[in-house]
Image (cartoon, rainbow, N blue to C red):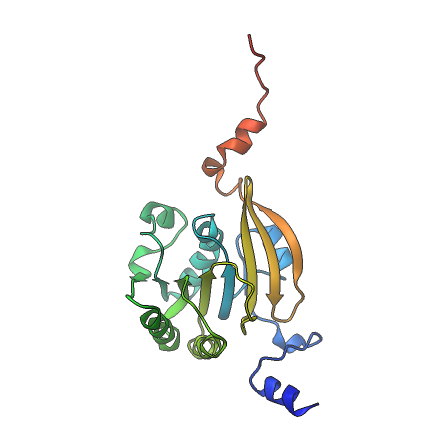
Length: 223
């Protein structure tokens, strides 16, 4: 192995395609189709990179996973820099315990990253969600170590960008679809990327997809 490859391996920036040891412990996403694509679900610890525009259903996608993370561990969920005030009714309906939810609204990206690191290291948090905070490679690695140390997961929600791949356990890209979300798996620790596929969310959130329901109804003739 060359000196460069050895250096990358020591920093855990080199992924071995045949390494089963790299596989993560999965928590069901709540969507059987997605669990099949991810070999069981979302990782219970480490970094989850979700490239998405805001408000297309990204939080609805994550709620079943977050509910399990919170319920099974009894620890906190933390939202950092959410783009809007989360709907309490939606969270409660999804089984989120509001008394174990902390929302942090830092003034700067530097404060947001500091808060994320402290939460991950504390051991008090099951999962941390952080919205649209710029992240460089060195900082991503630092947060990955903090997540491993605290036995937590950090979900990074950021806009799609052609940038350097981050050292994460899972990387997804979401785009909107009339029946739910179009997902692409760019990176999965211990596995391979996956081509884009449709995640149908109508069964889980029927009230949000009236267009799909109405399309199935017979059309009345004019006149």
